[in-house]
Length: 308
Length: 177
Image (cartoon, rainbow over all chains, first blue to last red; front, side, top):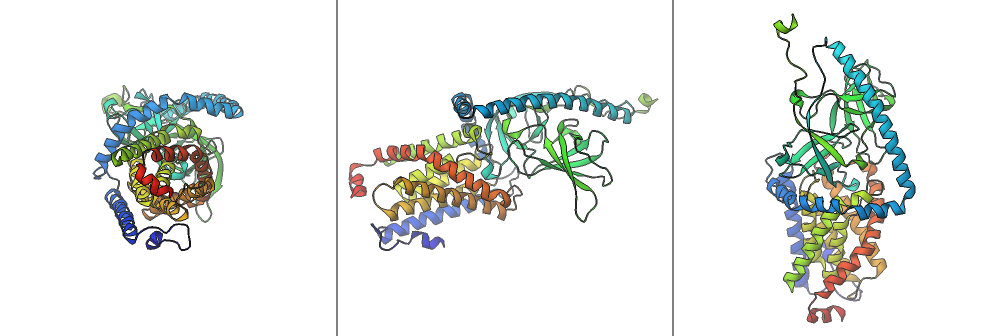
C-alpha cells in the first residue's frame, strides 16, 4: 500500500515529477518509517533503562520552561474562553461551590474513617497524615485523542519529587508520579486506563481496587471492584486510598471518590461500582506531591513494652 | 536559504508543541485539543512537498513523543505524523502546481487528522497499550478533525505565507509556472 503513495495520478494538471524525484521521496518515507519503528522497538518496554530516556530528559529540560512560560501566558486564552462561554463560567463556578461543599462532606467522612479505623486498630495506630507535601502547578496536559491521561507538573527531582509518589489536591487523589526530570514530573491521573489504586470503603473498611476508564470531562467515572465478594457497596459510599507499603505509590487515607451506582457482574460473584472522583481531571491546577513521610509513622510496630 | 527554511520549520514545530501541550488543553472540546503540531506539519507539507512533510512529521511527532506529559512508547506520534505529512505532500503535488484551495486544505486537514490518529491508536493497540479505547475512537477523531479544521484556518495560511517568503526567486518561478 505504501508503494502506491508515490505513484503519480494520471490526467492531472501536473505530473508528479521525474522518476528520480519519486525514488528519492519514497526513500525518505521508508527511512522515516524505519526510524519510527526503531524508536518504538527501542522504547517498547518503557522501563527506566530505555535508551530514549536521555531524549526525554533533554526534551523536558527544553520544553519544561517553555510550557511553564506558556502557562503564565494563559490568561488571554482564558479570557477568550470566558467571553465565548459565560454560561460555562457560571456552571464552573456552580460546580466549584458544589465541589467545595463535597469537600467539606468528604472531610467529615474521612474523619469518620479515621475514627472507625483507629477504633478498629486498638487506638495504637494513628492516622494523622502529616506528610510533607510539595506544591506544584500543572503546566502540560495530555489530550483525549491520544488517550493520554497524564499531566506535567513544574516540580522535579530538584524539589525532591521521585517516581511513585502520591499526587493530590485539596479535593482528593489526583494520581501518581510516573517519571521525573530535573524540573518537571509526569503524573499519571487516576482516570487513565493504566491506573489502578487500592481503595477502601469508608463505611465498612472493605478493600477494593479503583481503576480508570479513560473517560474525560466532568462526568468521567472510575470502576471499583471489591476484594471481598460479600461486601456490598452502596451508592453514596466514599472511597479512600488504603495505602501501599513504604507509602509508594499511594499514601493511605486520601479521598478518591464517591460511589454513584452499583452493577452486579454477570456470571461472577461480587459487583462493580461506578465511582465519581472528587478531583475533576479537566480542572486541576495546583497539586501537591507527597514527598516525605509523616512526622510520626502511623504504623509503628507494637513492642511488648508499649503494648502492656 | 535552505538553512533559514529549516530553522523556521523547526521554530514553528517547537512553538506548536509548546502551545499544544500547555495552552490548548484549557480550551479543549470534550477533552480533545487541537492537533497544532499536525496542522503545522501539514502546512509544511503543503508548502514544500512530501519529503518535507515526512521529515517535519517525524521531527514534530518525535517531540510530541518525548515532551512531557507524554507517557507512551516513543515513535508512535513520529510514525503517525510522518505518514500524514507525506500524504499531505502528495496531495499538494498531484492536484495542482498553484496554491491549494481552502476546500482542499480543509479536506487535507481532515484526512491528516483521521490518518494520524488511526496510525497512533493502531500502534498503541499493537503494543497492547490498555489506554487505547476503540469505542471512544470515532467520537474523538470526529471532534479532533472538526477542531483541527478550525485551527488550520488560522495556522496554515500563516505558515504557508512565511514559508513562501523564504522560497528563492528561481524556485518561486518554477512553482508558479
